[in-house]
Length: 552
Image: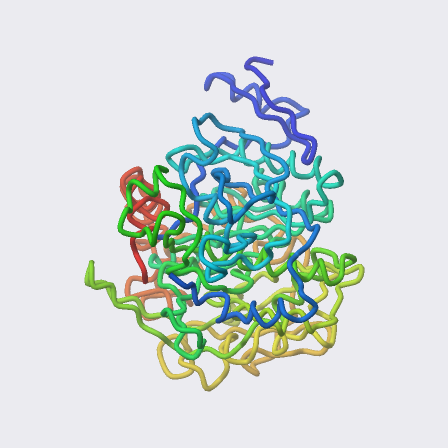
């Protein structure tokens, strides 16, 4: 077969191969090849003193109970590397770089992430500390000096984390990076690798992405992996109380593109986070004003929220090493605080932009990370999974149905929709959705097999599972299925301009799903739009340096 095989993975049945374009038809026709996915670019999830975040989520109080520090738990940081810092003395027990570079962290992103997990606060007299300073860090470097990587590189790092699991007791992987979703999670090499790590007993925590200002369905891969714990970002407004906290306007929202998985799973502080500074790194040079002193700097983004959850997971595992990844996920989600303002509005003075938000399941997930609540829970998944549910839209009923995966822990009587997502977070009747055009656009219901919990009290439809679920037996990604020109995304289909996602609906005045909207040829997926080289994925866009400067 033409081309050169440069990587063969052990965690998924796949290999990385460099082939000339003209050889692709031959490769696709090979009986031993089930699917071909391009090697796509990945970026670190940066959105643009004393840090209040630990106080907001109750980390200090929780650590005091039993003196939990995450002692002995291995946390793999798959990022831009971890530079030397006295706040991380002796914490990095293994290093490996999958990219070229001259320093341990040329970009300056991974060190900040690692500090949120494990910093001991030595340079700040304890004022800036990680959630789990007793953990061991495994530094797997995949982002280069520009904060860029590729699928093949990240999959290789995930592969290595699994192979090192026993040697370093790796129980958690933190992925504060991502890229757009191009294919179903059932085919995407990133999400398949995440699932393999999860199945190997490693909890995978992923940043949701910083595309929230573009609206719903903006969660990035691999945050669309149903098994993973996907984390959005909150603003603490630099106060210890959570009463004034708001969702960060850039925090990516669900449901996930294509598969309609309900994400994020929860939110955590991610805006204005004080953490370790890598002097001379790319981010440090681009944003000198963010520096607090010679040792600390401020960063913003879901990248900073994910390690808050990773650190909490380490505390949970120290307290009970027998917990599985699914155990951790259900406790983190159930223990999350459910109290949010129904709506909030962010005003960006630098651009004049106004960004309203609704506290729904696609924005705040199951709630706001609450460490003491989570540590107090005793729920266990047992043999069941904790995959995030998906959504099916019924054009006949004009309603959406929340679907649980087969063998789901969410069927447990103590893990019903109200207990996990809360009445307000899931479109209660008295919410903002009931008093605007949103109500007529989206009537979310569920009819769980365990007893028929209903999000809006509008029961009557049975959930569908398996291959005939959200996208039907013909599959969402088939040429004549949901992505076909006359199918689900067509202008006269269920997702068209006059349907549930139409012009007066929740998705904006031109309808995110309308023919001239987000899925239109000149819109989000167009060559000069959100995914274009000068747009959301450009060097100064969602994952670039300008995002780090944004504090909203």
